[in-house]
Amino acid sequence: MVSLPAQDRSAFSPSAVDAGWAAPALAALLIYAVVVFAPQVLNDADTWWHLAAGRWMLDHRGILRVDVFSYTHAGKPWHAHEWLSEVAMALAYRAAGWTGVVLLFGCAAAAAMALVTRRAARQLPPLTLTVALALMVACMAPGLLARPHLLALPVVVIWMDALLAAREADRAPPLLLSGVMALWANMHGGHVLGLGLIAPFALEAVSAAPPERRLAVFRGWAAFALASLAASLATPFGVAGLLYPIELVRLKFLPEIVEWRPQDFSKIGTFEIALMASLFVMLQRGVRIPTLRLAILLGLVDMALHQSRHQFLLGPLALMLLAEPIGRAVAPDAPRARQAVAGQGWIAACAALALLLAGVRLAFPVERLNGPRAPIQALMHAPAALRAQPVFNDYGFGGYLIFEGVRPFIDGRSDMYGEAFSSAFFRAERPDPAALDRLLTQWQVSWTLLSFGDPVTEMMDRRPGWRRLYADRYAVIHVRDGALPPSP
Image 1 (tube, helix red, strand yellow):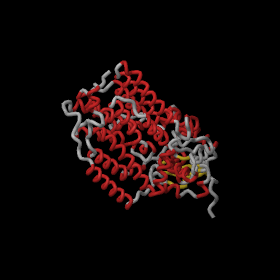
Image 2 (cartoon, rainbow, N blue to C red):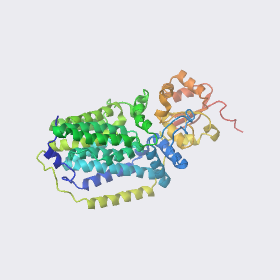
Image 3 (tube, rainbow, N blue to C red):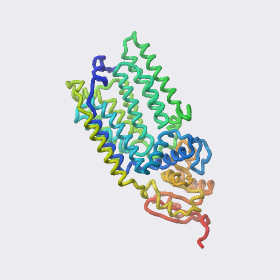
Image 4 (cartoon, helix red, strand yellow):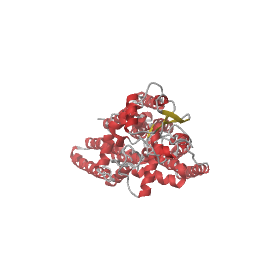
């Protein structure tokens, strides 16, 4: 095993190294500006239903435990596992509409970026730090969306930073850190990853300790692990909340959903560039990574390769793990404890600019326009009498329907719809005429809201007993004959 000698570890302790807040403040400002002004942040169908869930919980002063949105699963068990993030989103929306939402997520991204940069800046020279941060953002870019995983990112970074700090100080993490796990568990289901990270760090600590101290070290980390496990159960759903992520990833239909598909390397993308550049630097410089941390890194890479949504976490966590070994390889003779860069002035300047950007954003508020995840114009052309009837909708339109008070056939809550129902839906959308006919008949569907150009949309054009009611470049509505009363 490759491990840091005790004297070198102490040199990297937070008390011994202070790179100041200049770089973290500037990096936070840049990512804040990107999130606040980039249209991509709201380009996700699930944002709509997360907001609707938060709105419902605020209105009813309770946590959602059953489906109140769809007509196909109405009243069936569904746990709002990310309830805290959803409530925060709804509060931001009530305060300032969509502008409030993007400002909230801009602050979350900025906080995470500042913390990651703070750690990396202690160990990397400026040019290397700049390149590393650019590669990290390249990994994160597809996941910079207004969804709970971005709100929870500062918590994820705090957790990893605390585990690394504990190893640098050659001690177990403080038991109070388990409170961060409780917060994470109520914000996003990825808290299971946080629990999983404890084991390799604990094993590294026990292995590196002198034989006479190994039992004491084990007890310290075991106590922290148990406290964290107990904290992860401090949600409205208890054990069900802990098992939720595990049950979700076992669903066989997940590859039908873009974010759950493996990475596509048939054409060059930002993730491939970031991965290749990182490998080049590490191999060319002979970066040596402690064995168990290498195992963590490879596990994160494997997750990102199998399911593209995980590259969002790979970026910041990989940089935090690699900053120290890359720093040693790139600048082996550089002093480990650099002189602190004055930070108060930078923090004040960047905070002032962030407030200015918020003012600009509020002066020019965000408006949701007709788009591939927001069929606004199409729904406006659906009569109220039709909206109240069963609809067969595109998977990506379900969230918008929920937000607008229309009960969808399906939406992004994959855990609730389950294996059989979801598989039948995706089979019908391929399209499979027989499968589609079964669903339309079984659920007595009166109208459809589908994406323009999809094969199933074209099939509906040729379907007897149905006609187009409306079409634009994003969505098409078909209505069953007799579903609407005759015009006067």
